[in-house]
Image 1 (spheres, rainbow, N blue to C red):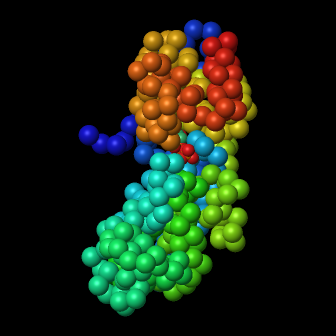
Image 2 (cartoon, helix red, strand yellow; image 1 turned 135 degrees about the vertical axis):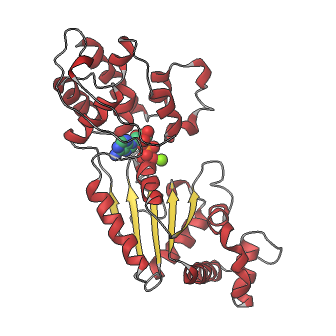
Image 3 (tube, rainbow, N blue to C red; image 1 turned 90 degrees about the vertical axis):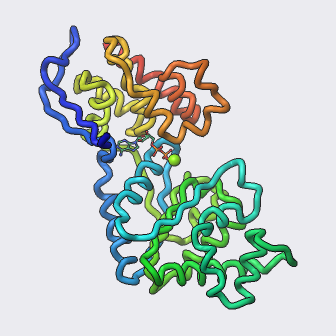
Length: 315
Ligand SMILES: Nc1ncnc2c1ncn2[C@@H]1O[C@H](COP(=O)(O)OP(=O)(O)O)[C@@H](O)[C@H]1O
Ligand SMILES: [Mg+2]
């Protein structure tokens, strides 16, 4: 089954009492809307890595703004590059070097290429063997050496999601690595929420602030989520209410489709998104799809999403 999910919005989808624009909209589910500048900047950075010009970019944005979606989009376009991933997690934030372990796991077969002192430091840090706690500096140098060795085989793309949740030892090691990448075929992208204590944030690394979608992109997303049944006024109101946050848009937009009995893709979308991690806190079985999505948002967004649903049901 193809990933392609094309939605055709035509005049016959109009609902009663609704002014529906007659547009034909093509929306590929794997395709992002409204992120062309960010995609271009990332593509340039990754292209540099392919020709031994290392690049680092921290991408910062609030919950639901589309960080993971952009990360996945980058991974899809990595072609022949090696991709190493790690993802911060509140469950492992207290486990020293757990994030580094996740990131370097596929490269451990190359450990023998490191000088003994560095190999020892990294092996102990990753608890592959016991020994006196290594210097953080040695672990940083070892990680850098291992990644450089790995990139000799094929250019390397490092993708770190939810970097604000990384254990501090990993975040410090990655910051060390990021500051020393120069002429290696390595691109490092770290996606995080701009929290003050996020070690990879606001520490001089090149940073891109991910903000809300513009009105055109938001309208496309809204039309898709509502199965095409949205008026320009409703879309503009929802865009205003959510400041273009895609997750808030998705949480707010399908009410009309729901009322029309056309069914929703929301529960699936919700499970794909960052809110899935909260399902333990908000048991899915006890909630409808809108509630699931909205529960995953920060409290301010929950209010907005609820308000935006009201916009749709009121028009
Ligand atoms: N540019 C976009 N175009 C279409 N859908 C998007 C876009 N950005 C995010 N989404 C959708 O919005 C939801 C939240 O995005 P996500 O990447 O999980 O946010 P974050 O990781 O910042 O919390 C996901 O369902 C995602 O597919
Ligand atoms: Mg995410």
